[in-house]
Image (cartoon, rainbow, N blue to C red; front, side):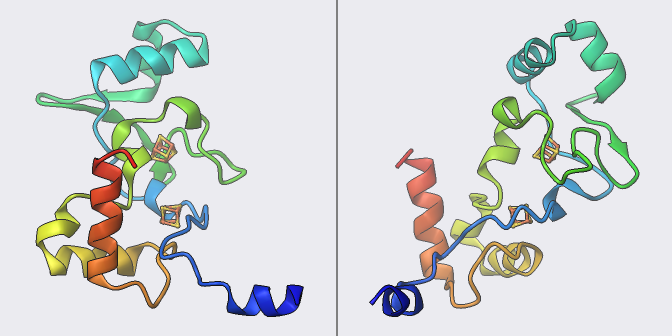
Length: 136
Ligand code: SF4
Ligand code: SF4
């Protein structure tokens, strides 16, 4: 019976595989002032230290430094070193609102994130995004 349930229970439409792919690249997401304060407090350092050692202060936005092709907070163990206080854009990924109105965006995000089941459709992904936006 247990075996039957294992084989027949539906696959989740999305389940993060903790592969770290979304923490790699040439740039990271933006970090708001409030998020910076939470990160500094979490790391037990001053805001100035955080900004100097970990962030890139741009003209319009602030983001996290990239080292060795990944976000500076990406750990060797494959986990995020600031997980409890990571930026909103990290928390909501890959359920990005662009999925709602743009099938090409959905296809690109799905191709880039192994957390989506192969069978997950655009309609189902849109529902996941809506649920996240509604906080449910
Ligand atoms: S790319 Fe997708 S599966 Fe991999 S860590 Fe990011 S959200 Fe999770
Ligand atoms: S803050 Fe954490 S989740 Fe966000 S990109 Fe950096 S390592 Fe990844």
